[in-house]
Length: 288
Image 1 (cartoon, rainbow, N blue to C red):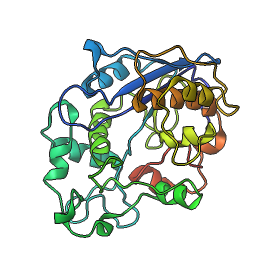
Image 2 (cartoon, one colour; image 1 turned 135 degrees about the horizontal axis):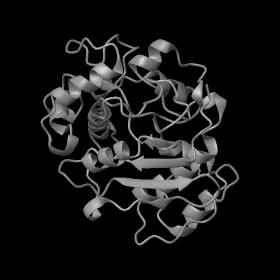
Image 3 (tube, rainbow, N blue to C red; image 1 turned 30 degrees about the vertical axis):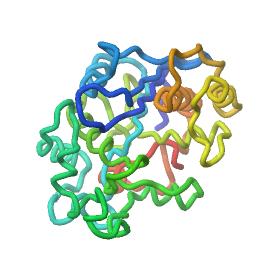
């Protein structure tokens, strides 16, 4: 099935940072057509993760496709467990529940979850051993790399500017707290009405817009408009922003890319995604 009812498209640049307010979170929204996405104003001036959850639940009946920029699961297929020797989860949903139950951080954070398991499951520095021993990947990440998409990140690597571990495990808490209010693809079938959530990778949108590897970050209005108005994205230029940063520009471009890509059959039916992969690890929308 390829859903055809979506008329709104949102991209959320996510954050796993400690604390209750996060300038690293940006929400961009657009309607069908070609008007450029706009940033959604956060409550109290800065987004919290809980505020994003509340925003989503309030719009669960909207015909809106929402993309989150974090990994929706840990690898499972490669080793037969999400956290070998600790979890018996087979479905990603069970991993979400486990992470939520074992994380005491404020605002759906998960930093303490990773820190309590450093060297056993997560690499947080040289004291944990050889970083190569933690490089385990989901099937969609391996497929993306094999197709020339680039070197993937793993949720077990929790150090450095490019790490996705903290944001991903914080995101798993949010997905668990949704409690079925909104379908999450591919764990749930694509719906025929209402909202749906997919995992996105902002680099895919950047490549579609013609931005070369190593130059994915758009830090000014001209670069953003060049990407938005590219043939693959098909958006009009954006309204000027008060401040330009990677979070805002990534969210704006990716929302427009979602709009342009939402009816592509191959993205909803990736050739390498089996039912077992879909339920245990999930898949990144845009990796075909």
